[in-house]
Length: 210
Image (cartoon, rainbow, N blue to C red):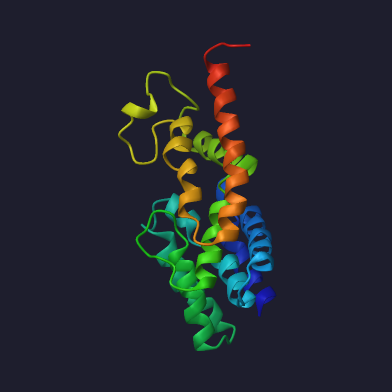
């Protein structure tokens, strides 16, 4: 079932942004495996892996303005894919909840351990060196500046940040507080430390320091 679902999911990423492409899905899958291995409680690994494969199938559509919420759309489309492949109703519903609850900015809270681990794995990929690369790749794609001293974080009233530097402050640094599991928090702490060190270096360099 898992390989069949992956085969069905892969084409949805043919025109994806580098920040949310199939490589992102593969990294989240590896992170989810790590979280499952380290979590002390029993976890349905199958539900998690299915949800990871499908969690961003709607992201390109959202980026193009065709839908408002890729998590809601992906939940419905993912359910259709799994039903087409003969998945049991209970499995479909559990995977759908994981997809629906994974998104940073919606109001759906993960109600199962599997959904919490999917969310944590997805958020972990937005931290660390890869997370920084994703931020600036996406910023370049949408034409936003890397950094603008005329737009300090404290005066930036946008939700996502008017520059990518501001985005890191407004969104990325908050991700450790959004982890749902202890194992997720442990990995997030190490990754966010790297992000903070990068920001300190960036601030020195934009100020013209050697």
